Length: 265
Ligand code: DGL
Image (cartoon, rainbow, N blue to C red):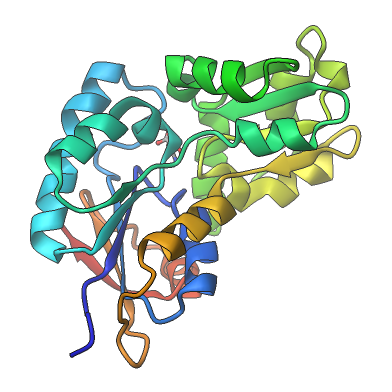
C-alpha cells in the first residue's frame, strides 16, 4: 500500500512556494498540501505573542485535517518565533525555515553580509544566535521590509510592480554604514526568493543572494528517506484561512507550482 500522506507546507501567504519548488524537484511524487494563513497576513508586522499564539493552534487544525507525514513551516517569521511550540504541539517531524546566515558566511568574501527579512524576523534573538554562531567574523547588517513581502504577493497575482520599489528595499540594506561592502544577501523571508531576479536587476553591483529553500528540500528528502510515495503525482492542494484570491493570474501562478485544488480551512 503506497503511503498517501502529504507533506504540509505552511506560510502566511505565497512565500512558502519558494520552499515548495526545490522540494517538488527533489520529490516529484510527494503529495502536497500548501497552507496559507492569508486571513492573518502579513506576519512580519505582528507581535511575537500574536504569532506564537496563532501558529501552533492553526498547524494543529491543519494536521488533524490533512494527516501529513511531515510539516514544513515555510516562513522565517513563524519559524524564528514559534518553531519550538509547534514541535511541542505536533507528534510528526516539523522542519523550520531559518535565515541562511551560515551558507552566506561561507560564501562572503568581504565578510559583510546583509539579512533581508520581515521586521519581526530581523529583530529575533534567533537571528542574533545564528550570526554569533556562524558569522562571528562578519559584519551582519539587517533590514526588515514589509514592502518586499507585498511586492512578491502582487507579482505572483500578476500585478505590475515598479523597479524603483525593489531598489528602495535594497537601499534600506546597502545604505547602512558598512553596507557598501555587502557582497552576500540572505533572503530571510520565503517571499523574497520569488522576486530575487527583480532585486538583482536593480542592484547597484552584483550581489550573491542566498536562501534556505534548497537546504530545506535536502532536509525533507533526508527525513523521508525509506518512505513510500504514490505511483503517480496527485494535484496539490492549496488551503487558505481567508478568502481565495479570484484573480485568474493567481490561480495560474499556483498551477505553475502544481497546486490545482483550492480549499478554505
Ligand atoms: N513569508 C514569511 C517569512 O518568511 C512572512 C511574510 C509576512 O507575512 O510578513 O517570513
